[in-house]
Figure (cartoon, rainbow, N blue to C red):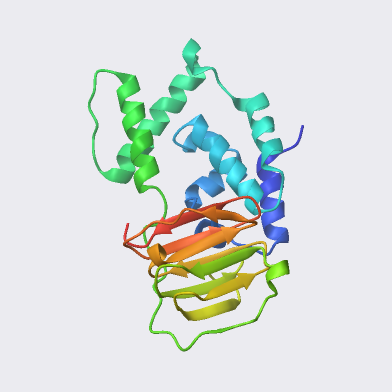
Length: 236
């Protein structure tokens, strides 16, 4: 048995990261990251969110996310089907937090309907809605990486797009900044990358041989880690 929250906090501090850095890289809201470190799991919308965010946070810190999920499940998981008192308290707190955030009151005769609506709302609207905007960029400059050693490859397949690539997160060193023309590609070896793409429909992101699905129509902020690729529309 180990302490979930203190292990996450110590790993973050060892990496020299602040909560806002992790929030930008993982797209997990800062208050949920702090709740995980404080083991205040009732702050999160549901147990499913706890396990999902816990795995993502641990993986981002290059820890074993499965071990953290297993530890949480063995110590804190509540069987909601049996209607335990603790599960009911979690649902009440969940409803209170979601109502306060959206300045709305949800009235319903079925508790299940309320919880479902709040979980959907949390998924659609959670996270910081502001994303960095790329100004007019200077001509592209980047280090040339051999194709055989590249972990992440970004290709312009359908047209040109402004592209900014930083090492680690939004405040990391700039690895590439400029316009990627159709037919061009940039390759990177870093395990963690932060990307801002102005026209994601024109680009293709490949990580360890797997092509990641991108949105279209709006600029995208994308975080690439050792285990996953997450994206957020800058228009949301």
